[in-house]
Amino acid sequence: MNAKRPNDLTPVLALFARNGGRRMLLGAFLSTLVVLAGMALLGTSGWFITATALAGLTAAGLAGFNVFVPSASIRLLALGRTFGRYAERVVTHDATLGVLAALRERLFRGWAQPQAARALLRRPARLLFRLTSDIDALDAIYLRLLVPAIAAFGAALLGGLVLGMMDWRLGLALFAWLLAFGLGAALVAARAGRKVALRRARALERLRAGAIDLVAGQTDLAMVGRLGAQCEALTHTDARLARADDALHRLDTGAGWTYAVGGHLTVAATLLAVGALAQYQGLGAPSAALALLIALAALEPFAALRRGAIEAGRSWLAARRLGPRLRDEDTAIAAPAGHDSDALCLYGATVVHAGRDGAALHDITLRIDAGERVAVIGASGAGKSTLLALAAGEVVAQSGEVLARPCTWLTQRTELFQDSLRDNLRLADPGASDEQLWDALRAAGLEADVRALAQGLDTRLGEGGLGLSGGQSRRLALARLLLRGADFWLLDEPTEALDGATASDVLARLARHAAGRTVLLATHLRREAEIADRLLVMNKGCIVADLRRGTREFDTALGTLRRH
Image (tube, one colour):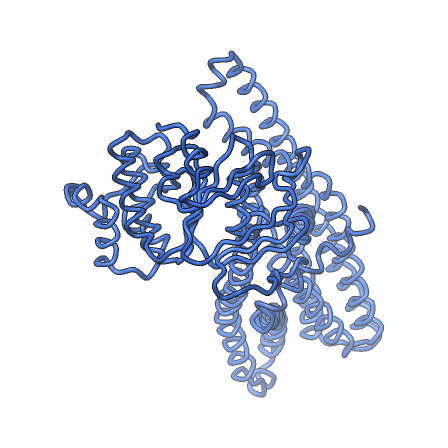
């Protein structure tokens, strides 16, 4: 485990370079330019003020002193620093936000892969934390570590060059001191803050997860008498988070004092050095002021590393969590050769769910022709829904081969979101016009209900589709199914929990619009299986019978299903 940790940052840095390389280089260059302009502005101003004061002591000196070039240089540096700072902020933040957006898209695509939905349902709070806090923590890598480090190196180099022109030993000493002290203090702060930052990140994750569990499950917790215990556990987690915050604040304050002391030592040592140069080598007062102010400004960019160093532990943890997902390149699953007339072909497919004993599907070989209507029946747990998930690509076969046409899956649960009816429909076709939406609603038997609403398609639903009845929600799901326009339908108990009249109407509409399409239907109900021309009987993950309409076995199996 520890051997892999040094490489955790590699895929994150690769993503930064791939999605924001040029903009990030430009941002680092602008940041360095702003720092150098600030140092030059301060040094030139000190030199100019000192030289002007000395020139004013005599009339001849004042007459021969050129005030225009230094004053123009100061104005130019001030304007350049101001506009440079604005451009640097725009470029660096645009580059960073672009990379983080690409990272979120990459993670979303990863969680859209087979079996990812199951993991998302098992740990929604943790994965939400990855998409929010973990990704946000990665901005410190560029904005608060790489950019300040590059700018600080440029400041050390400029300071060394300016003082080196006065005396090479002084320039080399300042350059070495700035790198050793400035970067060394940042490394010490990062090392000291790493464990604290990790504790804080984990405590914050537990606090958010606990708060979500408390809000979502407060009724159940109250019924079993655990509401108080959950609140107490949340209070303890919040206290741990507060202690971690306090420790980080103390480290930040300590690092700030360290840099302040280092700055005073730098200025004092430079003052003594230029004083000695003035005494023994005739260094002028304006040059001495220039050297002193350059040394004073040179340590400022290193202090900007302080915050990034304190947050380095959090960024490292985020990279460690997200890095493995970024290493896994999106790969297409090669499908076996099949016939153009096949809608679904399985060859010895076996599926094993994580954490469960035995196979959910065992050595399934199946072929469904395009245009067939097939119903899968069997007891609960026989593998019907897993078969549909395998056809939809939501699970991956551990062995065997799978070939399936693009399909639309109508699951047992209608997934509706806290949004408008229009946007809930457009999940099936984001580019659909309002006319197409009304056509789909009309085909699903929901047009009259929606037109009766005051806001029509703009009517907003509550969480989980609150505001629609069960039958209306199912019809809305049917409208989405029709709007999608796929030639292969996967239906998982489409009329379960609906009243008889609504169920009959939904089934009639499904049967009417399924003409020419392939239908694979998982069901316990006779009314649903009756629309099929072929029955697959499943038991313990195996297909034990394949029955065709018109045979006695088909009618017998159909008769064993419950009516309602």
